Length: 434
Picture 1 (tube, rainbow, N blue to C red):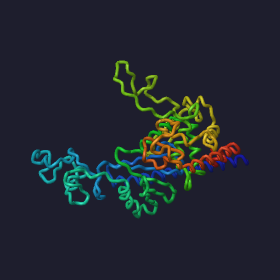
Picture 2 (cartoon, helix red, strand yellow):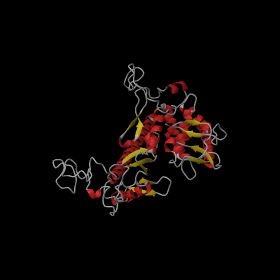
Picture 3 (tube, rainbow, N blue to C red):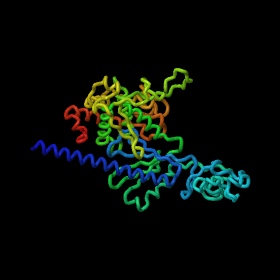
Picture 4 (tube, rainbow, N blue to C red):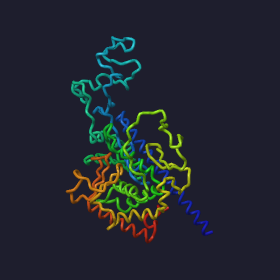
């Protein structure tokens, strides 16, 4: 009876945990859709991307959601009007008068609009980029489109809309506009979930490209390595990533992925190589959308990541063994999760093989054994580690790690290794050890 009672209590606790996780995820998606709706009401041609750990599949239950707004190349400065651009197909110039084709255009020559067009797709003449130069929000009389809005001013326009009474009771807005990367930190009052909203220009989606590169690496990892990476990040959030003078989650993620790539045999796929030049087609060319056995279906048992609602990525259920790995390097490794965690902490502990003053970790293009010269290179004694992602060069604010931060990180790894050897994974992760 005692064992039956304990089993029932365990199942009830597990059910409560699942229900809390599902409710938290549902609330997170609801808040994301609400914020996205407000953003699209200000800029009709904008795109909202989810970047960071929520995009490449290494997000914890309480990790932040990073959102990147990709603005169109031409935006009006008046928030009451949508962004418009001078398009000759939808809004013809005055030279194409309505008197030339009376059957195609309306009879009024002052408002040159085609019949199938509406005021939403073809705004009036005074609202376009070629409007009155003296009117606020327009450009000089040469007809040039207005310049792209800076991230600080764009987020400043979004700030009063998020502070309106319907949302003010549920969301807490903390603007961080004076930093290197301006952003709006939105905190849900009920679930304490944090949304970091940043802004970029069309064609310069650095966060989205970096997330896609890291997602390709995470998607090719074996399931046991993904579980270990999540465990290390959860340990970092509990012991090391909080408080002033700590390492950010993004540099720690790059350290984990590069460590798995450098193992023998590797626990993660190598960095993506640049695309090969396109060869001219021949008669015996194989279908490029087929696999080696000329099939067009994905092999069974290959773990993948699927994109859900709102742009969040999550692991898909594999049809093979629950604990089996279909990757070749994982089959050769035969390492348990405890051994993988011990190997990581042994590599980064005090006096270990990790030498931060001589390497720069670049997961999207390989592992360098010599420190780069120039920007962030030799000559800065306070800088011990340079973590550079070529996709986000000059944008990532956490790419340089000071010597004191690296020393405290190595000390934390030494303590974690002793805890794992003495008490196992339960002492390191607590209830998340399951």
